[in-house]
Image (cartoon, rainbow, N blue to C red; front, side, top):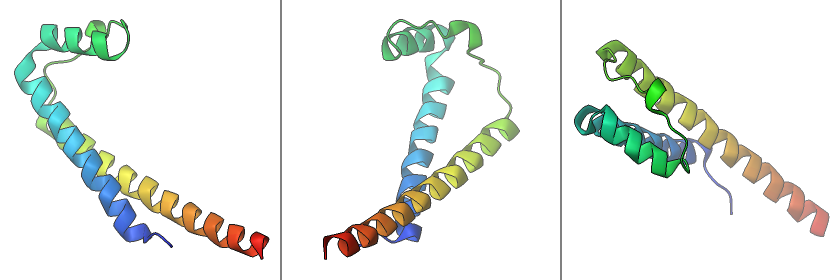
Length: 95
């Protein structure tokens, strides 16, 4: 079985894009104090409140979304290519 790099990249990019949008809405509606509590629990007590910013411009937000999607697609495509190469190499070694 081989993975399609385009499809696997698209799947990774879609998942990362949805995660980014979820994080965006969380940051927009939860407030800095609630986010600090949330991230404190998520990162085992690490206090991220000093670096949380609540006034990010729309340009930075869109740029971050686009960069996340592109990098996730590249990562997913690379994983599929490496998987396909390793599967092909493993089949040759076992024969």
